[in-house]
Image (cartoon, rainbow, N blue to C red):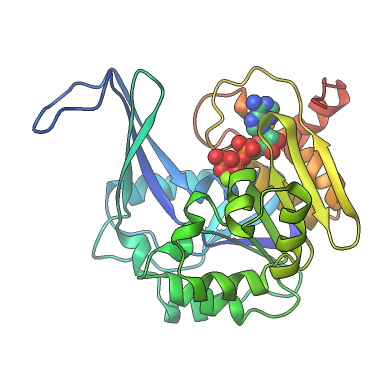
Length: 313
Ligand SMILES: Nc1ncnc2c1ncn2[C@@H]1O[C@H](COP(=O)(O)OP(=O)(O)OP(=O)(O)O)[C@@H](O)[C@H]1O
Ligand SMILES: [Mg+2]
């Protein structure tokens, strides 16, 4: 494990994924052809970082019950520590996912213990200079936890590196919380649609300029699907970092893999450009694998890159 730690606030919940022909009609009942239970949410970023040998800690609440037990055993298997005591009065929440025959996904989110994270619990978690803190937009949209998390982020020591992935619900975040977090963000990690929404600009160079002005004290990484990503740093300018040509089977969670590997590489001393290249390789390998938490290990990424894989331009 490398010295600098990752503290992740993105909430861990359980995904209950069902494959159905179509959504049930009002008052109906349909049979799923397949189903799977998997620890999700912030688990994927932490497991991606932990597989790069970065020490990862979950700054969030689990609870009591079957879903919490599943999450706890997955976190333990990936050597992820827990910074906050569980809520003994309820289970962690879940997301019911209905995937229909067209591949479209419909969600029902049922929150639980993760939304009882409060300022007192956060005050006991103190990352040191050089440590990394990751949070996503999902941390800020919930009125139960958003204000305490934004306040905690604002009070972090100046040497703590903050990475923020606003995720698709970026426009649902309260303006004051979003501004507070953006002002403290060192690395902004997001996809093209989110970058456009957050900046209010369309043209790539305008988007990057706005994001580097309002946020991103060190830089921005824009995920660009199979094309790889765009890296813009304050000191190093803008780079298109090509992706790798693979048979994409499951792109779910590719962004989480990218975020986790990018941060772990920075923490290990890689340059931002090298970190982005390895994050592209890791997420290309991950989209070839079906299921959650499919990030490869550091060694697997090195082996993949040594085979001189074909890059997208
Ligand atoms: N089809 C693909 N082939 C190769 N690499 C891919 C493919 N799709 C995604 N990637 C890699 O995964 C990274 C993240 O994927 P994407 O651009 O979809 O981000 P995202 O929209 O933030 O993802 P998420 O929906 O998981 O949040 C990309 O930057 C790229 O490196
Ligand atoms: Mg994303």
